[in-house]
Length: 162
Image (spheres, rainbow, N blue to C red):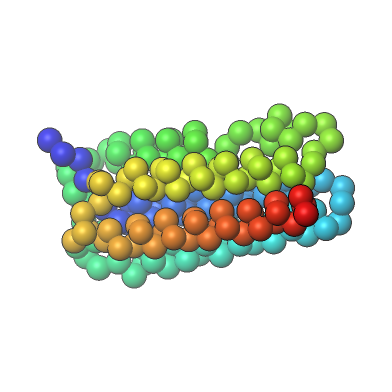
């Protein structure tokens, strides 16, 4: 039996990942003392909030076929699996452990970059489970948005190393 996830399920997980990112960047902003670093991390948190809202809007705009259950799953076990997997891979490590006693912006950005790449890997891996008729184009939009996160963080790292 082939398991297929709907675009609605994938977008719901995307929202969760983005909300996890918001929390990650907020905690990170509280860990640094430099005003510029705080501002950057708050900006990244806001950016994640905007993407969560985008994904929520995308989910609200799905047609009936894109929202349809693809297999009988009355206990929502597949969605629970997706959420658990997403939480375990993206943004859920304890920031205090990750950042250390005196967190450095470069280290935080390196960690953020890894987490953004993890989310791209997660979404790319899930592509095979979302058929075109059930909103594959929406999932591919999510992936493009995540690449834009990577690009912004890489630009900020380049500024720090210049």
